[in-house]
Image (cartoon, rainbow, N blue to C red; front, side, top):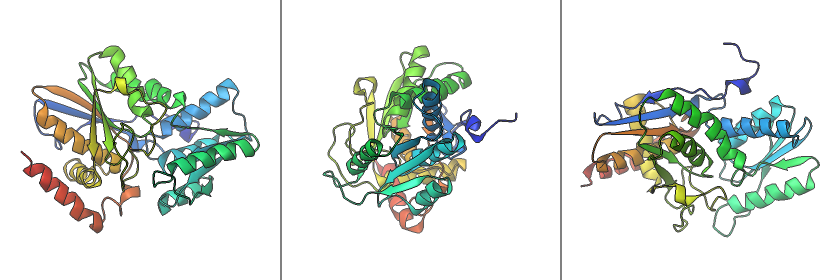
Length: 324
């Protein structure tokens, strides 16, 4: 098939059975390989969807500017979507943004606005959000994406990723296990799956140190999941279980995934693999688990796969194996 633009190539990612990573014959783990989207992550979906809906409803037109607080995948995807539709894009970032992501934002034509003042939580998210709001109010023809509160975020996953999973799978789906940040992807997928599988159990994988579910804030070194604010999109009553995963466990999960399945994925995918490993030990019978591997691992080579990370990941792996 020949497509008209790279935006038309977003979605329709493959699903893979992770039976080498999880060899228990009674538990089937199926993973959507979202790193195979054109810009390397599941964030391609809301970036395209938000831009398309904006043009459809008249909120956007060529020459306008998108603004968003983002230090990674969504910013890269928005930069591409904006360029393809004749828009400008400003990414509000902070000193923790990786040099690779900063370079990618620039290569794809995004403007980078760096904040340097930590917020009251000790991070930069609140500062970034304030700056994004200020830019939207002062720049002409600017629109704030506001991924933490934008219903188009979860709707993008409901309309696309959730529908693709239902199309690919025959029979029941017992568990959805996915990492959270804005909670848009988890809610969008879960709402679509529950239309056909109302008894689905939804498991959110959050970062240790994240405050999304009311736990105390703490340091987090692995980007891509967790947050220092509670997203407006969150509906906690729709989530059956929350599993918190620390940095070392995320690294161990990444290494387990690449060692067993040859899949080089980002830090949030390692967290999901770690969480599923613990969940599988507690399941009392046959089950089918669906998960999402959100992004590629190349952007995490030093942070997750480098020699400095190896010791922490191996220690976490041995601890999990030794646990009763």
